[in-house]
Image (cartoon, rainbow, N blue to C red; front, side):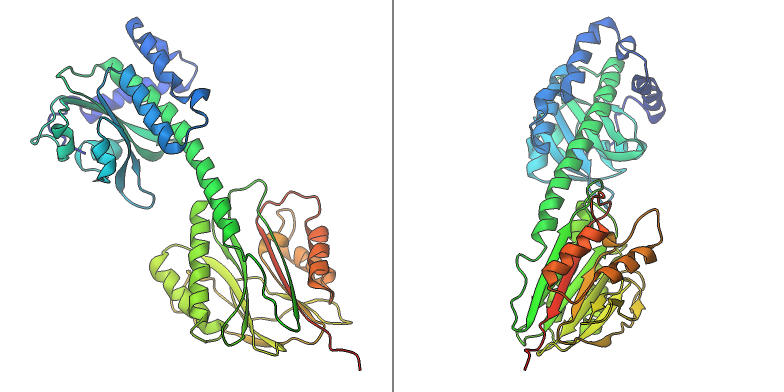
Length: 436
């Protein structure tokens, strides 16, 4: 946020302070690190993560913390800049006395300026002169800040951001102030990370649920059923199913799985689902539609991998064209026959290899037959080969009402076991022909 000229404490000096402060993570009493006159301030500082702040949102929590930090170190301003995910920039997230930083969306490249230097070195920096010749952000000197102290916010070895304070008088920050700020930075980083993860989990759950179809199509001669169950003891995943019709009457069935967990996986899942629906409107089959979706993923979602399978049927829905990108094959159950895994050529997942030519196979869909599409959470277990789960599914599937089939499949394959991965299941049945 500012230039590094005028910095009183070098990286070497700051790292020594870091070493002292790290003792507070063990059994050492933090009060032993600072003089007795700072004990009261230390007590107030360590209270920034107390239960009284438990109901605040992440942003309100940061503002309240800044007020307490500012008071504890006799500062006039305080600010938190957080590292933008997937970038090398810090973004102003909360401020006290420097609110314009947040209003103007201040961004600081890591390694540039005051906050950028703290982020790059991951060590405290004390600045004993603030002005155009020493800082690059005019908000600081225009606000009358004379001296500054900043420390990194770290979670293990991961940089979360930077916490800094400033004074409007030329009263330099002491070594005790540095130690106090490091102690609180450890507490703030841990508490912020827990709150952020909880907020992301809630947002991802809502997004994940909202992206599943609100209702299945109603088509003459077909019946549908589905299940979606999120993992019980794992972060939010990117599993989804989709079932929709196009203006020409074609039916699309889709299941997919974005690699990874958390809010980012759920967001990518939504983008892939939306892109696939859009490309489906162009009127091509599933293979060409997957190729277009893959091209979009390769360009805009670099580093993402997605498995997906599409099954497309035209009226009167007597056959499906099926194309798979690294996804498990569907199960087809025909009247009087045991369920079987459909022999579908599998090409690599989306996002893995550029310009892959996708394939599709035509599969007859006889009257009374049931087709099941699913994600690997239904059949994959850590203590067994996935072929065992696929075999259980094959034996359980039959040519019955889709709702009854889904109920039996979930009972037999999930039962009372906690789900360790998301489960998506989609079933469609072609009604038997009326008896003559």
